Image 1 (cartoon, rainbow, N blue to C red):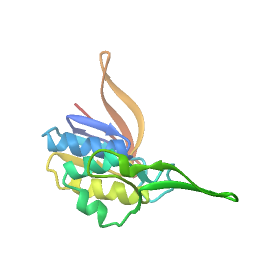
Image 2: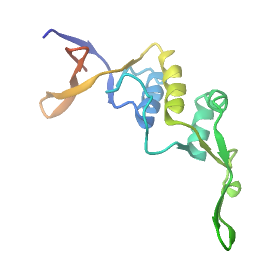
Image 3: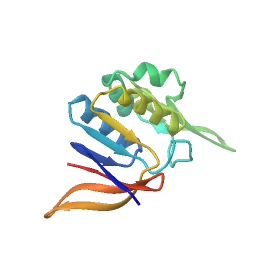
Length: 159
């Protein structure tokens, strides 16, 4: 089994919402960033498909608000529940501060693709799909990278 190594400034393990957003922010700050994702794509069921007002604001700040809105999400401004005795409101997001007074419902893979596509345009960013982490690499007491298997080949990345 051959092994190849790449250098990076920061290795993010996991291409979920936090991982892909962190990767984009680091890359835009000039940090050489590698995001490793175990799966070959983002097309699978997730626990949540809500994008909250604070995340919508972050997408605007990253210049991705229009791309996200083009998906298009289903916007929710108020939460209600229907009982035999009637309909009852229990949440009114229109009272939130800021521009976004709603949450967006969208498949998480669409959200991840918007951020990942923007990230790939950054010269200091690399997203590696189908990368299953197998071990941590240590430099003394500091984790300095990871080893992973991709296409049957063991590879490493780190500082």
